[in-house]
Figure 1 (tube, rainbow over the protein chains, first blue to last red):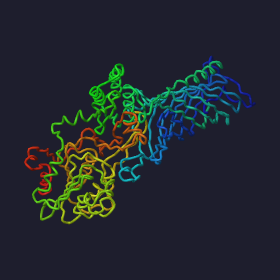
Figure 2 (cartoon, each protein chain N blue to C red):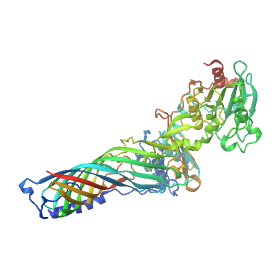
Figure 3 (cartoon, one colour):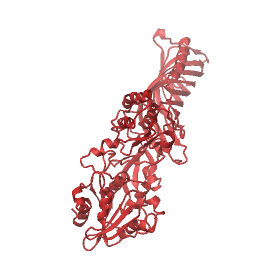
Figure 4 (cartoon, helix red, strand yellow):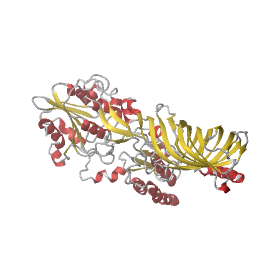
Length: 233
Length: 401
């Protein structure tokens, strides 16, 4: 994780000494960038539609971060990130073996987290916080049962690959939830840290608006593995 | 501070329980109902989840539930409902829905009788040009019309009619009429006599052979397909019966179906294209479709197909408005469309499971296909031995106007 470094800076003698504290109003700051991969789990109870199989799909995440380090073991971090929350739906139906949809969804996420760090030059960190976000764009690709197929038996016209057009009645583009994770980071130069972080975005907002009485909720749970670099100011 | 950090963790973990639970829903395709309320709720739920037009429909379906539930609770409270009361209740429930294929069939738990409700009943009969289709009267005139030749009619297994009318310069106008689109499924079971009209029109290989009948001969300058009073049928007919008259594939627009149980869970739009068969009629002459208010479903798609041909013209009346097709047993496959089983569960709902729009994403469901040349049926002329709509179609072929 980037920018979640602990207090102060690593000393040449291997000790890790807190030098700047909140009550001095001169907490240290760091900034950084990160990028990595995502794996999203689309949470939906298919109810009696048991042949609809949802599976996780990969994507990417990338962003920038700023951290404030008021204590040696605690930092507060704010990110701005692009996070993909992708998933796939297959129809496990003998009449529709070819039907599937891959949904690629890109979110702008703004997580704010508290980071607890243990260790010195090489540090283990725990991360917890919340995020808000916005569903920026989507894309759908796959095969669908079409009238053409039923009429002619020809599958050529069953394929689609298109930008997703949001439905203002159905789609809830506001996204919020909790975020938690763990990170490893180490100081590799005087003002430079490298990090690796495993993070979960646990969505608490339904991806649909409450537009009908019998609404079956859908959520996203997104894991990210991201690598970053941060610079101490 | 450490306590604060761990407090944040605890609060975060507590938040994980904030997701809403999934609904508990019965499968409306197969649900035993023992009272009027459960019948109503099952039918309401099936339409709620499987109805195809919620994105365009103006009916407030949640409000329908709130409005109608007390009615059915009242039936249960007194232990009965008359057939008329039940019909009115379900007609009120579906009133205003766009789907002109839809009908609801319910077994009255008290009387054991079937009652029906149909949203199109509240619309189609109130059109100022609405009429029943005098099918038998119209076909009875065919064989005696001026200049007619080669008249053939099929048997009761597949009522079908063929005739040749005089065209220009000694050429002929081939005419074909049938009650429903079941050619593909029936062609192998029909007798030679039943097949005679079809073979006269298309040749011996209406489905999979070579079309070399009258319509393909040099002596024919135009064809008229008459779908007045034709209630539709199988989509598989569209390729051999209609697209075979085109010299190119027919691109009608787009179709989509449902992809989930939410009202607005739709699949992507995919092209609605009817391929021209290999054995198409290699010609480029006039193709006319004759429609009336009772041309439904496949008949309407036929009109759309011919309207999209450069050599095609639709003559007659605006059609019924059931332009979005369906497949039987669709609910198991698409979680939309037909659901229920009247004999087993006491309810059955017939409804579309493909939304179809044209190339500009405009839907004709509930509206119908507007003819290029409007010609309303004249019953007085019919009584006097004239089918004014067919005569108008012949006039168009002969004069180009």
